[in-house]
Length: 74
Image 1 (cartoon, rainbow, N blue to C red):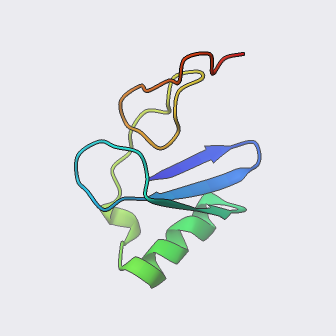
Image 2 (spheres, rainbow, N blue to C red; image 1 turned 60 degrees about the horizontal axis):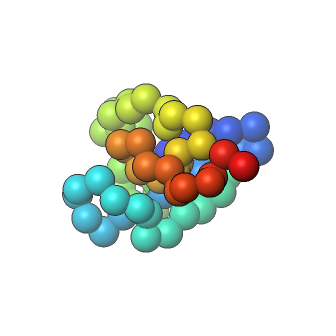
């Protein structure tokens, strides 16, 4: 999963296919850098990606469904 914010692009990696927290993450300056890394390291081509909505406010960035830790918005 790739997530962009004001600081750059995060690449989250998973060992399972069901929605869960990431096993690892990497940071890149741009989304293009992250996608190129995925192509090189993992064989994931740009056409293989599926776009999903951005997480809701204060929710985990590495989950597809909204997951929020109690008190996270403080």
